[in-house]
Image (cartoon, rainbow, N blue to C red; front, side, top):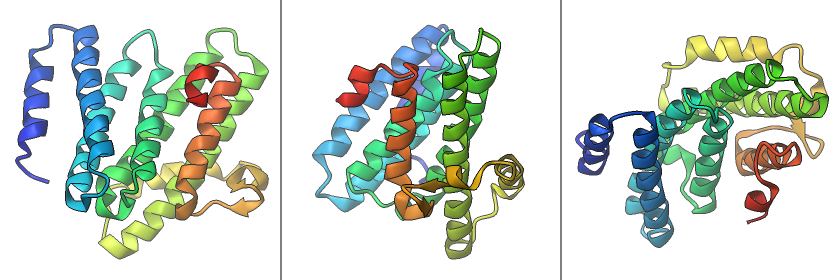
Length: 213
């Protein structure tokens, strides 16, 4: 999607921000507006797709700034929440394949950063186990989704990174590559997102009250 005036304005506002806190405020407010717009245009497919694309782009920028803040856990939570919202609003990932699989991959990156951060701050075994299980679920989903989209949309931009994800997944127990006893496949994305968010709530990385909402 080239020359999107909505995104161009958000980029300009971010460029004008004086520091990370201001960037987070600008991108957070933009996400809130876009989320509301998506909910309002659910029955208008073309507008919903445009809005979903913008959400994924802005969510990525928002998450990247969280990595450099004192709240790195908000980076994967941001992308997970926005990915879940898009699917809940019935926008097919096939309509935004590059942005969607890119967001899946970056969610793994940010979750790994969260794991490293947790390991250096007096790790709780249950928290580590939940994060590691989340990484495996997201890795399994990302691989099968990218393989499917690669064939159907002639994608190749993540080929190198997907090889790294495969290496990450290889030592994982088979049961963690499944959800409710079934091997993870692209159609299970929303279930995977909710399961990961539930894990984050269980170890209080995500406020349980917010997950309940």
